[in-house]
Length: 120
Length: 112
Image (cartoon, rainbow over all chains, first blue to last red; front, side):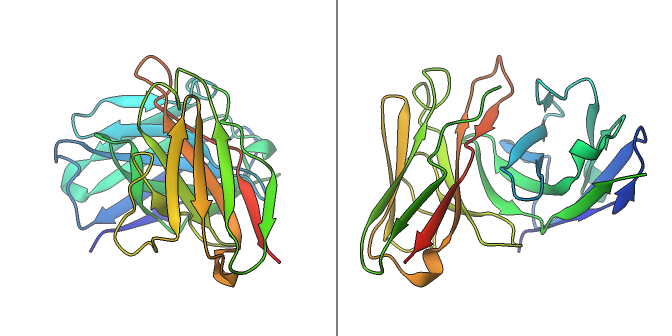
């Protein structure tokens, strides 16, 4: 059974760095074709792709946010970590981690999401 | 990268069919057969409904179907049911020289 769970602070202050951890089970990120991604959704708005890491440790970032994002994985712990620097109130959103089959670029499993509010 | 274009809202009565369009460019929707569709109920995580343009995951009713023509993909829901009321998002691979995937802006489906 595949599960993903996001964890991290619910509230961060402007200019701070956000660190989110995705802990997953039921699959291995070292399997060829397997990827994990972070996606966010501001309240009442659309989904936005943030970052992706693949089984070969290649990393890809949203062009508009790439200077602020870092994605990494710890295969032994079944975790993927996202850091986002210089947080702003517009970054308030539900942040999801998700499993992707990079052979066909679709998400078959999502975490439940974690709401991050940016406010002083 | 620009989001794929979807209608803000569509509606239909129970039993009817509705189609949601998703328009991109030759660099995403038109260039690859890697279009997927997601259903999202309020407060819930999205759920995969269609992948590879027209394939249905196990457990998704065959009332849901997908297609593509040129730079526009479509999701058709036939025999509308009350539980189909949700937000729907399309998603496409956008190639290895840009950020790899892009979402549509979402469509609110209302079952009248």
